[in-house]
Image 1 (cartoon, rainbow, N blue to C red):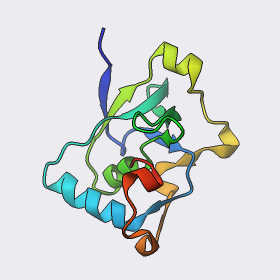
Image 2 (image 1 turned 30 degrees about the vertical axis):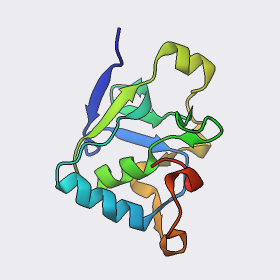
Image 3 (image 1 turned 60 degrees about the horizontal axis):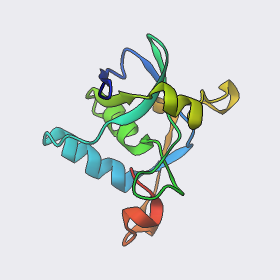
Image 4 (image 1 turned 90 degrees about the vertical axis):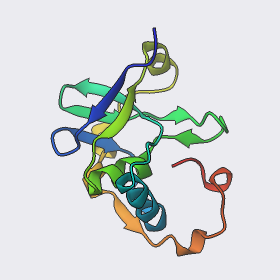
Length: 131
């Protein structure tokens, strides 16, 4: 059985993460790519109910010491707005790694701040983790 892929309309469902800010330069690049029709890898999410999802804290496949949650992809799709391609976390992943974010630590995707990413120019994905 393969991954269950869903497309979330972020105007109709609530998506929460755990990072307070994302790099504005990456967001600009991602929005331009989305508008050009580029398809990004799915973001892994936990389904809480039919209208609430959480980004999953899972190891980055390229570097297991880092977490890949998809905050940049989620914020870019929220701003566009275009449906966000998501992969529902499997039961095994949920038991091993992922768990709902405590309510006091949840950050609604629309409330995540854009920070000035100009100081990060020249860094690679390996330096800062995946988007």
